[in-house]
Image (tube, rainbow, N blue to C red):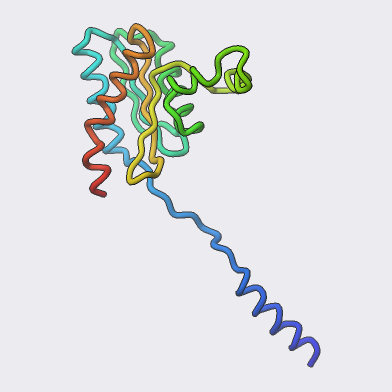
Length: 163
């Protein structure tokens, strides 16, 4: 009888303290990533820049990668790194660059593995949630890279908000 009472109390307490064990979240689709990457590389090409564009999911894993055939080989890892860094820190890399200047309390962030604190990586949000990132590398400066990345975001942002 005592064991039955203990078992019953355990079940009641366990049910009251039950926690959700699975997460549900939104992330970019491959189709959205391809569309954003194409728009970004088209914008850079129009400006005369030879770049690589990477679009990553909310975990920082690449979904789409487009490289202009004349872009330097270093632009591939840099574009992926910018997109993944933006996602990881949930902030555009231009802002992260400003926040982590030498001598600041957060300057050590730049020394972490795979962090690329250079302008040109932006976060992609839908309905207030992080869903991915876009990184561009190869234009003359982070501001130009960011302009191209924002063109990629603009190509999909209306559709993201309708989801």
